[in-house]
Image 1 (cartoon, rainbow over the protein chains, first blue to last red):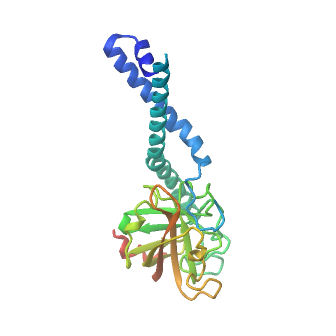
Image 2: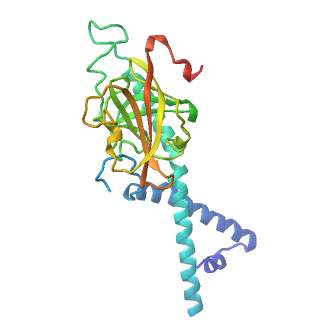
Image 3: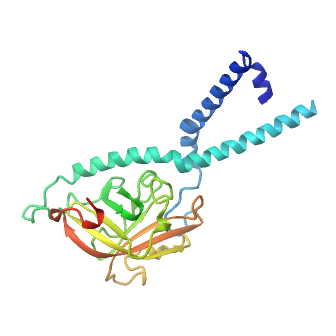
Length: 55
Length: 221
């Protein structure tokens, strides 16, 4: 998968490096600002109260 | 062909691992920005709310039962912990939404300065109660309401199971009986990164002073 992307990127070595960095930055930004804020309330990591029965 | 498939599968697993790591980083650090923004907003809202005068006929800076009635999700008090170098606006309620970006006050518990227990829950994240385990007996915790400052001294730092609800009772030593002491209790997750225990800091009121007397010396400035 990654080698396939690497070979598809244009512009020789410099172009491929820049392209890879842009792809990585885009993916991280998408996860950080869109996917994680959406997924976070669904996941059960945030229960800090003492209330007996709550899961 | 098989080699390509196996390699693709391996890359997929590595990618999933990286995403999980990134999510862990988000859980801890990504929230700080949001919390700080929300605290600034709550701070301003609380200042606005606290501008109301005392009840008619009451002393200046005195109680106002209407204005002091807590609104779910809105700020009820400020909390200062000098040892951690932090302060927050505490909101009313401990639902997931209430305490997403601020510590929350257990609605059934008392308010600062009252006989009983001012009980607070907050997340174990860097912008909230991350280093709460560093608290030691005798440390100062200050609560600020519209009418006064309440200086508490830490009496007990302990770790409990999530089912031990008595820590937020008005009289934690003997739940159900009439309280005699003025306590402040903070509950948060323990250990860091997980939530199968609760870290509890219990403090007792040392002294109170009206707003007109200025900031308590413990807070500096």
